[in-house]
Image 1 (cartoon, rainbow, N blue to C red):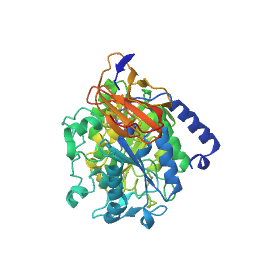
Image 2 (image 1 turned 90 degrees about the vertical axis):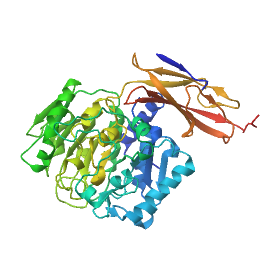
Image 3 (image 1 turned 90 degrees about the horizontal axis):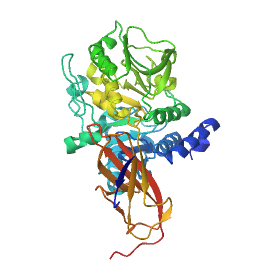
Image 4 (image 1 turned 180 degrees about the horizontal axis):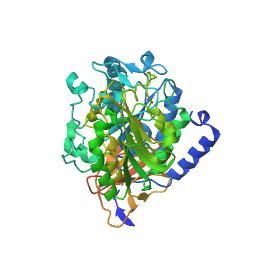
Length: 475
């Protein structure tokens, strides 16, 4: 054990078996907080307030991942987005999504530590710019579109892309978003994913989305066995990334992960960790059984164009058991820069989360839709953090020094500590005193986060509820 001292409406919509499953999960989460790279307190979850399914998914995810309640933003999109609206204009994005979200971050006092967004269901997947981009693409560039040529030709270069750019190029070591933020500062883009797409056309069921999110949480820290399949065919969609496969597969094998380069999709396979291929039509369910945390996608034109019946939709991978997938929301042509690089799995294996692995492997993420659990981290180090010095629901009237007890693998060191009260940063030093001054009477939550040393700054956190009965007059 590493001892660190610090003077420091959902259930009615879910079927009965799934309701029981979620209750059991939440009971476990109350005791154990798994380590990961980007943490729950650094993720803003956006929901469409006018859609019950959107709220249900967002609320389920916030509870499942113990995301601070203040990080859930329900947006009133008005008549601009109703039901399964596939696309909106850049102006509507600005007025109904971007501007209200920025205002909420300022008003809630959480904008200083939010590193990524997660959209719930019932958001449009495409922005009708010229050329079109995805909702996630416009969010990523912080509502400032690159030139039309950079978008259409895929020459825009993401600051988070870790390479390589060519068969002879060298990629960069994986890093967590926290490390990237230290380097990029104001130039840091805004990575984001969609938790699920439900309803017609081409969508998943609510139960499929919730099961996927649960699988993502179940995957954390399991270091799963299984196989990553790189499937190449005599198809330009497949050939576009074929040059990436050998190097990525070799790197995975050195890390103890089985990786296969083949010209045939797996059939009835056990323990699928990932599938990367290029083809207009696939049968994800026929491939076999997916490990929790698996990512699978097929580079093609319309996998993410969910209002077009052509080609297999990316959502079929989620229905089959994958925890993450990707698809273009408009004709991307066969530019490899617009799709995940084969090194996605290498970043994943080094302890990065799903969202960190995606954005380090995509050079030009402007026309891509990403669906899955952003925080899934199968290879994150196993660790836990317990807050001592305060009992659950204890009334606090005077400043109280806080102790932390961290259990982690031998040789693990932590270099940064963050303390949050009700989701807002209250301290960033190694030592911390919980001071109830200024807090409203009632129930509050203290969260302590410890960041591991390294480029992939895996973090572990713990929470405890406490009570304040009255405001103390400052000395």
